[in-house]
Amino acid sequence: MTSHSRTIQLGTATITIINVGDLMFRLSEVMNVPESEWRPRYAAEFEKPLSFPSQCMHIALPGASILVDAGDYAVAVSLNTPYVPPNYSPPPGLTDQLLERGISPEDITHVVITHLHFDHYSGVTTERNGQYVPAFPNARCFVGRADWEYPETQEALRDPTSLESRTIGVLHSAGLLQLIEGDFDLLPAVRVLAAPGESPGHQIVRVHSEGQTLYCLGDLYHDPLEVEHPMWMAQWADMDATLGSRHRLVESALSEDAVLVPAHMPPGRLEQTAEGARWVEM
Image 1 (cartoon, rainbow, N blue to C red):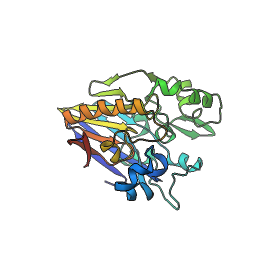
Image 2 (cartoon, rainbow, N blue to C red):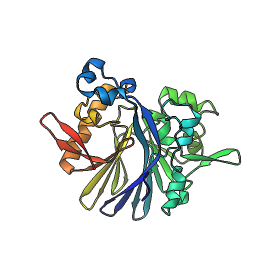
Image 3 (cartoon, rainbow, N blue to C red):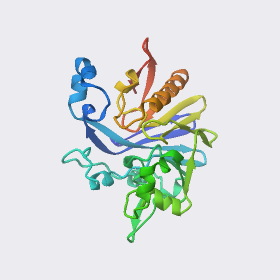
Image 4 (tube, rainbow, N blue to C red):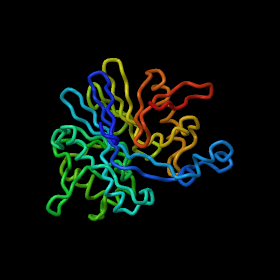
């Protein structure tokens, strides 16, 4: 196992967590928390730049090969996002890391995009002979309808040079994009659950096999402090929707002793506390 991946066995399912590159930012710059709330107890965590992996999950099941999120770190660099650490050399790309594990792009049967923030979908296509084509040509891609119909997404899709046009727009034109409303059974062992808040169409993925449960959380949480303080979240998130999604997840995860895999945190579980729940890293 390489340092940028981790594998979890869950019954008959094998979940591989693949980091395509680290992002870096200060919680004080992206969270909705007033300084008067974080400074007394969490000054160190909020003030210093923290490193966050940008993770994609592969779920191997009998007869199915599923990706949850498909990021391309080179896009983060090309967009000049401030979250790229200086002088940073990222791991190999998603496709290369899959190939290292004997998984070819043609093997992928389903791609679930938790939400349409660039680091979660930028790798769904690849450039070939000057054209963008599906990176996983035999896979249907599942996106929350509310994210697809979001005005900013639709505006971007009208620009043929935009990231949206050359990724999800290509999949839509190829007939490979399926829009989801609410909860959706992808397979008997895999269910996509609506979890709006980070974006209108944000969704998470539940895997259940032989009595064991794992959730791929997307950006429901970015940092363990958000579990203990559920009202703390990214500045751009819808607070009421996020709180509802987090409450639903916490209730289920505690009752199932589920493994949780966020996009930007190491995997963990929840532990019941007098105040609610706390994050326990695995």
